[in-house]
Amino acid sequence: MNLHRLHCFITVVEEGSITKAATALQMTQPPLSILIRKFEQELNVTLFNRLGRSLELTPSGVFLYEKGKELLDLSENTEKKLVEFHEGIRGTVKLGCTTSANLFILPNVLKKIQKETPNIVTHVREGNTSYILEELRSHKIDIGIVRTSVRAEDIHTSTLLTEPLLLALPPNHHLCEKDSIDIADLKNERFLLNTTSYGSGVADDVIEACQKSGFTPNVVYWGTETLPTLMMVMKGAGICFVPSCFKLLNSPDLPVLRPLANPVLQTKLNIITLKDRYMTSISKRFLAITEEVAEKMASIFND
Image (cartoon, rainbow, N blue to C red):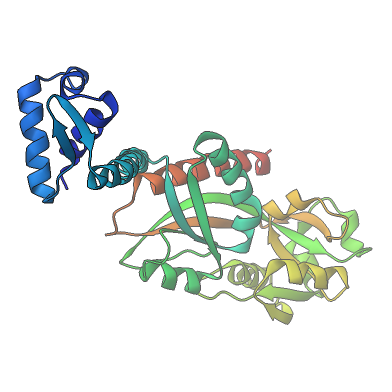
């Protein structure tokens, strides 16, 4: 169906005559009359009963007028949404991320998005690096935020946030009295570490630092999630290491967090995307906001 002809037909109905409609459409009467007849031929229906100079809608004309109004509204709305999508202010971003990113980065990202571009919807899948890579490669997500460093020919990686590692200590632990701690002070401790699903991660850096200090850590627990590990520290099961962002929780139910003085260990949150995949304007806008939020967080950790 020709939408221009439909628009002219609706204008004729609402203006009540060809002459008035032609004026409203900024055209002359004869071409408009020809256009309406061609529209009827296109649809193979009679839209008007012509009684001299007056026009009366046929039942088919009434039906088309009602449905045509809906169709034009939908067309205009679709066009508007397409422009918004192209400009990155409407649509859905599909994101895969670690728990820490979901806890500390995304709340501030969503707050900023809802204030600036409320028509963006964020669909999040949380998991480890292997899971996020699989989702990214199968095009189920657009962007990944992971704690490990990914090296693969099809993946583009950029650092989102670098933050110091903090040591989590059980309540009343003798090291709680120190403002900063050397890795050598942990020689006789029980370590609770999280496994890395892909590449190298926090546990690898901790073990390497211990070995350089002359001992192999006594690892009594290997986990996958940081919050459950922190609960185990609170029960006195051992010590663990967490990114600095966890101090933002500021909860009395969490262990004491202390910085490491020697060596200073750091961890990174990385953005991963597929190299050859087209990135929409919405994804670009989401990334820009995420990077802005991460930059502000980094300034807190570096104070």
